[in-house]
Amino acid sequence: MKYIGILITLLFFILACSSKSYSQDQFPIPDGPYLGQTTPGSTPEIFAPGIVNREESTDLEGMFGSDINTFYFVREGEEYGGVVKVGAFKGDEVSYGLAVIEYKNNKWQHSVVAKAVSEPSISPDGNTILFKNGYIERTSDGWSEMKSLGEPFASIGIMRSAISSNGTIYFDTYTRKLDTPLRYSRLVDGKYETPKSLGPQFGIGKYNAHPFIAPDESYIIFDSIRESGYGRSDLYISYRAADGSWGPAINLGDKINTDASEKNPSVSPDGKFLFFDRRVKRGNADVTIYWVDAQIIETLRPK
Image 1 (cartoon, rainbow, N blue to C red):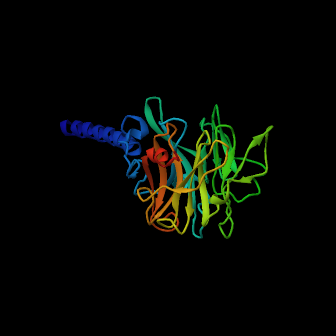
Image 2: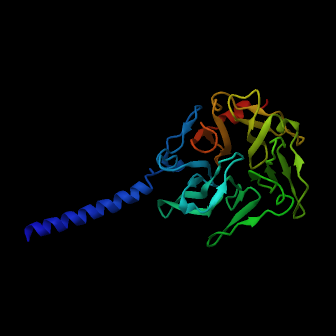
Image 3: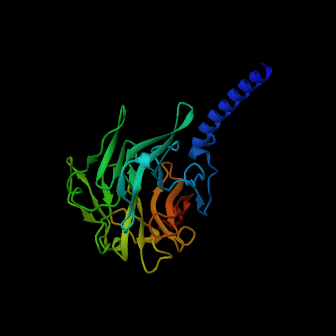
């Protein structure tokens, strides 16, 4: 009987430890903002390895919501829904969905926001998430079903759209030649106007894509394939002048861009950190979410 009691005690201990380790394994996140991570300097670092950027999953297109305790990212897996097309190249059709890790009720929690989606961007207030030419809205019960942006966006092959604080939508366009400049459409009297080009500097080379617009529209960051670049695609920035025109597209430089492919930029809501994907191989076979001090945005800003 003594040994049976010991065995029962050990069994309960193992079960308790197992339960605890399972919870920690799912959310091995330290306390503190930015998922408890030590912040980077001017050299890009892998963001939150083991939490996102896990060996057992493909994680990409990461961005913080309206605060630094809510991180959204696209993850591969059956629980994230059906097959969706990610990117413009053949072989990019895989099972992806949007996940979120957020700090709620004094603990980090993971959930699936939307299934079978990719290339998200989040409104500055955190209440709308855009996907290509669709969107979802925050409700009292969570997130709404997917809705169409309507015209003029519904009939355009958008890869990624982004929205500013005043409702202006910036977007790219997929064509066979990948030569369409970035465009924007303002919300006028409750309706979106006919899209306009941001300027010829946004159509140089090919694949001018995946824009991130500053909430106040003072700058835009995007990725592009250009002869002057460092790799397959680089990150570029353009600043808006006082008259509303956009300045030249400036390469973010060799500290950010490499001979790999840098894509899908976003800036944290406090303006302190730049996030982006780095793909070593074509497609999403080897992609990692990086982050870096966003001071480079001010460093490159025209004086």
